[in-house]
Length: 151
Image 1 (cartoon, rainbow, N blue to C red):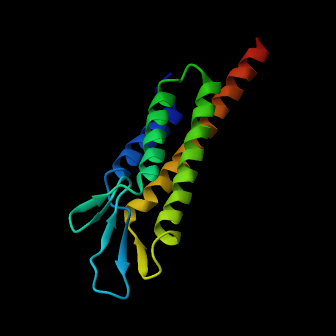
Image 2 (tube, rainbow, N blue to C red):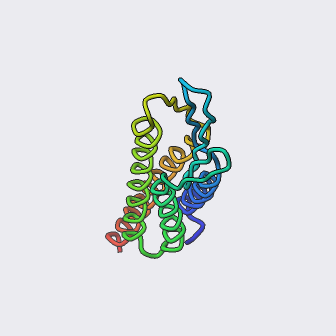
Image 3 (cartoon, rainbow, N blue to C red):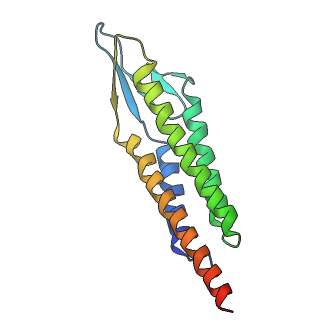
């Protein structure tokens, strides 16, 4: 049954996570000098049309969660696997949040100020959708086990 509600949650999480991969997630500005701003994406940082790929682990985490969410949508016949895949996606998004805080607020130079963009909230929404999908799969599993006990 691919039309279950958890499949919708997983599809929405996949779509918004894929959108987040393409949008800027923050800006680093220099407080002391008149340097140019550094625009941070999930895969690269852009400064004066020069890309540096120092933040690629954030891209890898979100990209893996996209692939796993897509695989989880089509694993609807194996509920145990689908629960494990949802747990993996939840872990990956939480790891992305930790990496975001690390790359945005902890690692930049002392003279840099970080301001987050709206797209940084999107993985948090995806995290909520993954949790809802996991709850839906667990609920379906309990229903099937209850129906098997009745027979």
